[in-house]
Length: 192
Image 1 (spheres, one colour):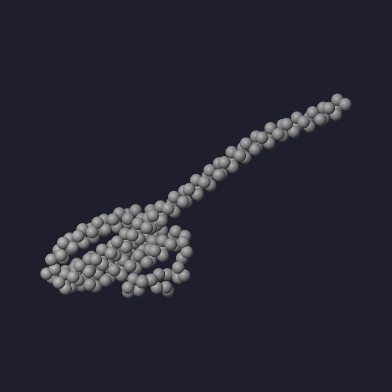
Image 2 (cartoon, rainbow, N blue to C red):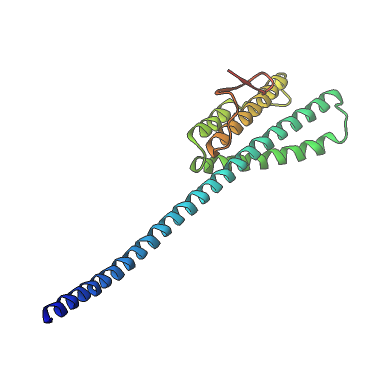
């Protein structure tokens, strides 16, 4: 009878010992699970923050190019007015406002251009590099101002269109059904 009692007691001790190990293992498993959840949560937060920063930068870049395009077209219109009506009394005042706005837009574009490579894709950055290389300084009193102005309008519109497509791709939005983008003479996108 003593042997049966000792056997049962040994079984109970083994179960209690196993229970202590089980509680200890459960605690370690819970701790590990919380650590994994914390890392996954941080990684998700980090990805969301990076995506948001990237999206915001693309918005700033696109707005900057759109603003440059608007300034280009406005200055071209003012020059046409000056050439058609040299005695227009409002022209000097409007020209001064346009020049000030042009300087402000250029300064903002330079700021965006300095920080954009931190966030945007290399392909998008290349579009900005090519844009800055293609833009011509327009002398509004020169004879070829119309050519230079039209050229800049096409270049800005083309860069805007191409950057829009690249931004959608880089941000993971649905891509347009064509692969490469080339603006035509009016800056409109055409597929190849």
